[in-house]
Length: 333
Image 1 (cartoon, rainbow, N blue to C red):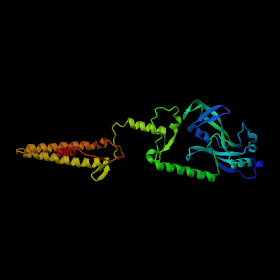
Image 2 (tube, one colour):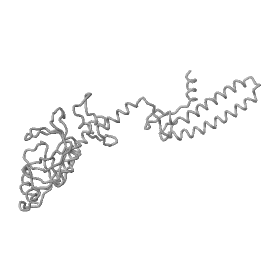
Image 3 (cartoon, rainbow, N blue to C red):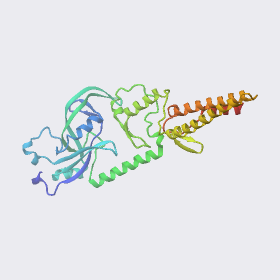
Image 4 (tube, rainbow, N blue to C red):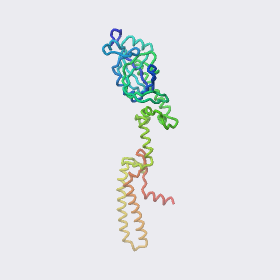
């Protein structure tokens, strides 16, 4: 710490220092893009790095404790506003004074690995940072990111609460169905879709967080399989009369009932043979055989009922046996 240049103990602050996207560096005549994945990976490299009033070209570790104006505690992605903030200690009197006068933050980083240029929201850039490491933080009057701000812990807490309330108001005003409506027109191709696909949204009902890429993949797979047969599980519910039961329970109950009915009908067929000399014995036997056949069909249908329910597991279905369908046809005509 710069004890010889501080009349009071270090003060803790929170500062917005980075926003994903492109930034122009006039001193290098270059425009650079940093995506969300790289930005989050770079956060871990900022802890313990020095803070200076204005940027420095280089610094020595031999006398860093007497030259620095503060220290970065941590850098992190703030879910409330989608920006990258840092928690830092302002040690020197000069740093504290500049912050009170409205100076804000500007980070400095080293590019470890880069990729080719491209477009981001129709803005061209010369190269993309694929891997980077923060070098130091500077307190300056004119930040590269216009949204930069430095807040006390109390102000930062209030800031986040207000941002969360804004998000809640948007959700309530637009409704669940519109929360995920990102575009009003069809987009066939994006010049640089990487950042968009890596964006995350919280699904309004389940509260599950997914990336746009995951949502697209799952939706595309569901669309491709929409015409395929869908099989219900034994635990799925079906509506039976005024009540409901699982497919497994339905099969077990009706299997037992149909088996008993088939047994009774077989006994009737055997009994009909004893009255074969009567005029109506033939018709009686045919009627009983037909009932037995329908019951057998019902029996087979029920054994396979859990595989024939072509509905999603979350929906209710009503099962009708073959005999019920035949009887309904007879009643109709």
